[in-house]
Image (cartoon, rainbow, N blue to C red; front, top):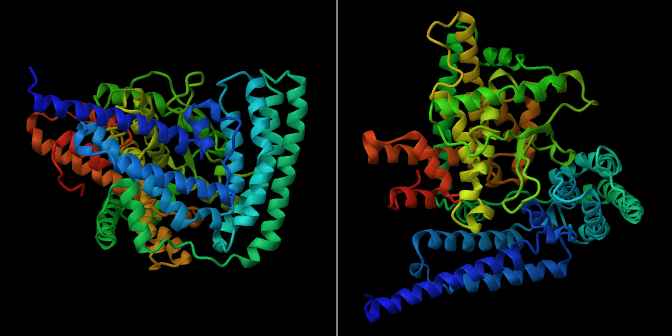
Length: 579
C-alpha cells in the first residue's frame, strides 16, 4: 500500500510523464515536421506530402518563435520526475530544439547556402517519387501540389541569400544541371511510364504544367546564381570554435574540448597509418605503403558491374553474422541497390535510404551507389573507381547494409520511443556503421582460411587495407572538420590533408572537403566509433567472462538513435566519460 507521501510523488511523476509525452508529440507534429514537411514524407507521415519547406523571412521567424516556445515548455518539465529512459528523451528533444535554434539564428544556412533550395526542392520531389507507398495517381497528385510551391521557394532564395561562401555557390552550380535533368527526365519517367503509370488525365495535365514551371524556375535560378550570386559570393563557411562546440554538444552530447578532440583524432589517424604500413609491408616489402595503395586502387570492378559487386557481398555477410553470433538481424529482406539520385552525387559515394519509421505501405530500403558520369574523362573515372576497390567495397557493404545502417534500421520497431526513432545522433548512426567495418574484420570476416594459398592471404590483407583506408578517410574528416571550421586549415590544405594523411585520391579529397564546409561536424564517424569501442571495452571490464558480443550489440540497438552518452548510462548505469 502506498503511503500518502509516496502516492503524491507517484501521481506527480505520472503527470510529468503524461505532460512530457503530450508536449513531445505536439513538438514533432506542430514544429519539427510542420516546418520540414519533406522530412514528414520521408518519415512516412503522408499528410505532409502536399506541403513544401517555406523559407520566407516571415516563416523563418515563426519557426524560431515556435522553437523558443517549445524550449520553455520542455524546460518547465522536471526530468527528475521522469523514468531514466524518458528523462533521456527529455534531454534529446531539448538538445534538438537548441540545435535548430543555433542553425537558424547563428549558422543561418538559409542566408548562406543556395544548394539547400535547389537540392531541397529536388529531394522534396524524390521522396514522393521513390516509394510506391500509395497509388501512382495519388502520389502524382501530391507531387503536383508540392511542385506548385517550388518556384516561390526559389524566389525566396534570391531574397534570402546575402553573401554565401563561394564554395557553397559553386557546389549549387555544380549540381544544378543534374537537378534540371532530374525534373525533365527522371520525374516524368517515374510517373508516366513503366509498369504502373498514372492514368488520371486531369492530374497528368496539372503535372505537365507544374513540372514545366519547376524546370523553368530551376533554370532561371541557375542562371541567376551564375551571373548574380557567384560574383558576390565572398562569405565565410567557417562555424568558428564556439558555434562548432555548441553544435557538437546539442547534436551528439559531446562536450570534450576541441583541442582534446584533435588529439584523439590524430592518435587514431597515426595508429591506423602505422597499421596500414605494417600490412602493406607484408603485402609487398619492396613497395612503400603509398605504392601498395596505388595498386589497391586499380583492383575494382568495371563501373557497370559495381552494383552487382555490392549485391554479391550480402549473402556472405549475413551468413557470417548469423554463424558467428554478431548481432540479431530482425528480417531476411535485403536492401535494393540503385544508382545515387542526381542531387546527392556531388557529395556522396554510397548511402543507405531506408523507409521512415512511420511508413507502412512501402518498406523497401535503397542502397545508393554513385556511378561515374558519362561525361567524365578516363582519369576522373579511374580516380572515382579507386574508392570502390576490393577492400572498400566490403567495408562499404558492411557500413551501409550488414551489420551497419540497414541492420540498425531493421531494429527500428523495437526502439523505446518515437523520439528515439525520429531524432538521431550521428555519432550513433554513422558511428555504429563505421564501428562495424573494423569489428567485422576483427571477428574474422574475409580472413584467410588456415590452409590459405598465398593469393588468398594477399586478398585478405588487401581487404584489411581497404578497411584501413576507409578508417583513414574518416580520421581525416575528424581532423579537417575542426581545422576547417576554426580557421586552422584553408580549403586547399584540407584537400591536401585528405590525400597525404587520409590516403585518398585528389578527386575524393575534393568532394570530401566540399562536404566538410557545410557538414561541419562530420567528425561523427570516427568520434562515434571510438565512443562505441570504449563502451564495449567498459562493458567487457564490468561483465568479465559473462560478456557476450551479440548481446552487447543487440542491447545497443534497443536504445535507438540516442547519443552514446545516453546509451552508456542505460547500459553501464553510470556517468563515466564517453572517451
